[in-house]
Length: 225
Length: 240
Image 1: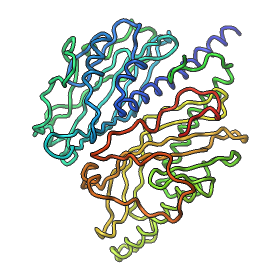
Image 2: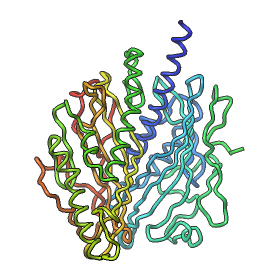
Image 3: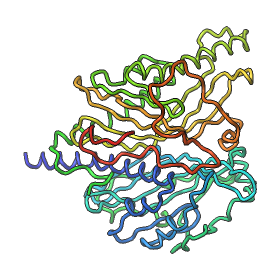
Image 4: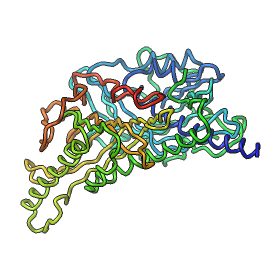
């Protein structure tokens, strides 16, 4: 009887964990869309667990709270009129570790980005990506631990992603070019493969499979095997 | 301090099970809303609203707040019926060879609900959720003389109640547009051209609770709607 109750509690807890992780992912998107990266970093990123990492697209891997903040908060584009960025979280695959201490999740993220330009009106873009994220539980709440954003494509509204992959818009920054105020990364990109006519889409990030403890799995900001 | 990602630890197993089941039922309810809206199943659309709980409202950012089930129908069904009527009229005039029988022929209102943040009240009697909605839309454009495709991206903020018959239903619904644009124009270009909202057949009961803040080259997006935080009971909820 006691074992049945323990088993029930574990299963109920896992369902709640999945819901809380979906909520956490949603909170990321709404705070990010509102330009509240600083608030998001304080509330939603792990502070106690060692090994906090953040890997956004083609900039590299940022390690440790100060460096992650130096990228995600200090390197965020300024909130100016005409700027608008939104990324949706869809198609989740989430696994909670058996020990309940960590979790892994992937999402497909359709989105749009609009950037003010120095000469002329802002330019609208479609921007799709994926997320591969490891989560850790701190003080009873789930937090982002290893956070990897993968580029699928970024293209001006009036140009397809096929055309943009061949004829890169001239105002796009060079791959890996840091934004103003951004701290340099700690180590190079582990994986980022935007759409290109001569590459086949890869299974990255890999959707998680059930696992017992984090020692048995990989980090989404490690080199893929 | 609980955050958006924590479950209160003082609840019984039964209460926790009810709340996690509620999340799934709410996902299904909002999913059905999308399917009914697209198919023009207007009675089913309104059937998802609270029947035993006072205070039903629908707020459309362009027009204002509509009260009660009659208001919900005026806000959600009225524009769809008017859009369909004009669409059918236009399609039959432009394409007499097609024998258009359904006013909605050529219309498309496909809305994908994504990025949910859902909080079920501690007492299990209500819930609030927000969604990012990506929509592909089509309707007859009399100026162009043909159906015109477009994109729309909006946010939904919805309050739900668990009614006495055991069903979850919508109590309050608010739609906050981010952009709407014809397929051939970006939302930047569309925003630079003055666009009037589609006409409605009825006026709202009171003005919108927030200024319209869809995309504009002169505005910075606001944090609206605000994703819900954990809360205890329906009365504790701030305005949508």
